[in-house]
Length: 164
Image (tube, rainbow, N blue to C red; front, top):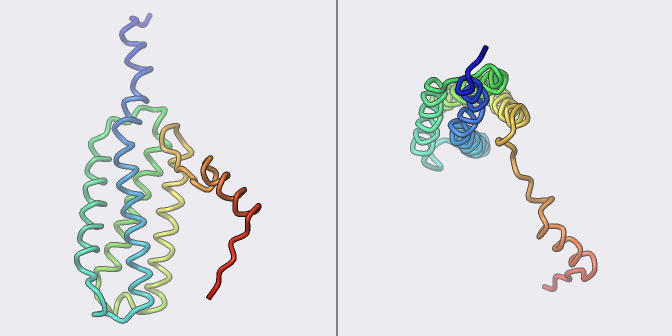
């Protein structure tokens, strides 16, 4: 028979995981956004047109810190699926960092661009799957916010005419 304190510990373990993992999820999402923007800039511009090293280093550090934080989490059985997606997202983002840090020639090929895009897509998918796997990780869609609905109604009622 379980003691009441043991039952409480089992029930609180997923909550402790969620609280500890939320900042990690946010950091991975931020890194995915940064790397996505950075990859777009590198694909559209020639090397040397902007500072690639600083934002790449910052994104790399963010992904590394998130990976270390994931490694230190106590993962209850109820969070195993979520944790799987979090670690897969971190691995995919590490792949993007590695490919983008390999040098201009290694980034410039069509194959490299496809690999970067595929890894970014995989990371975004895993982060979305993780957000849906447990409560507390949902991404907010501001298009459905109250203010957005009011703004759409106002624009529909009073079309804006642009004059040049």
